[in-house]
Amino acid sequence: MRVPALHHSLLSVLLLLGSVALPAYAAAPSSDEAMVTCKDGSTSKGGQGACSHHGGVATEKDATAKCKDGTYWYNKEHSGACSDHGGVDKWLDKK
Image (cartoon, rainbow, N blue to C red; front, side, top):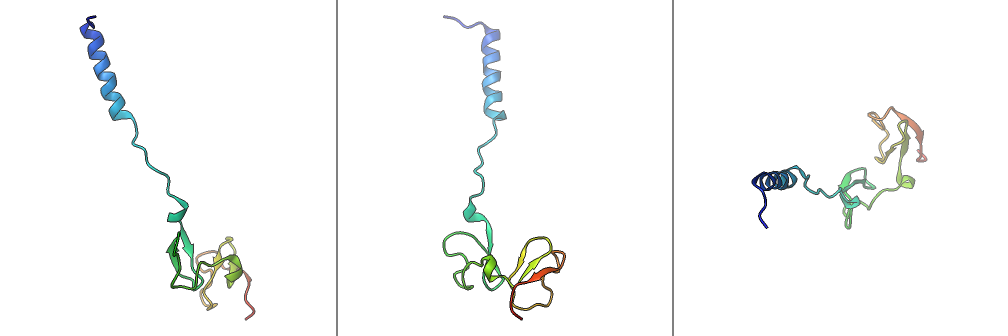
């Protein structure tokens, strides 16, 4: 069966546009790539071994203060705590 030239050209254009216009698949960042806070206040890329030389990954119970924006401060020094987060809402350590 012979395909008319117009249909053949249209089919070629659609195939070309389909291959160009389709976005490339990009995987969403995994949770392993999220940054975590270490017990010494430093940050590390999450995943196996995160913060292994910094006392481990910090949890809320390890925090020194809760900041007014809801984030936590982990440095044991009070000076400058939560300065970029609206200030200290509540001290969590026993100093």
